[in-house]
Image: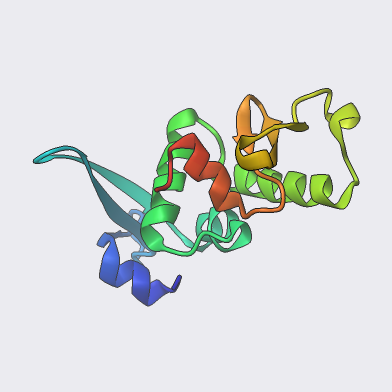
Length: 145
């Protein structure tokens, strides 16, 4: 469900170019979300293939709107989107494969009791579900629905 066409049809509102460049490769999407009855928040998010990969396909997030919500959240925190996506992917894989554990991460990433008997990890104070997809992380954060 992630493609250039899907982004163009669902969320893209503008192509911009750098000064004196004819390409216009900067893509801008509009993310409009309802926060109360008859009230919407609209945010413009710049995107390209790298952040789409880093926080999209690499983390099993499969819709343009979910990817844009995550890009907007990460950028609002002042984090680098590529670094955050790659860090989450690596940490999840390393933790699940046993390459790192609670001892190596000094408690930043480790098992805690979860709902319904499931365990989850803590990464910088945010709950993360090992064994699930990274999109579950962001649903718990309230970033994705």
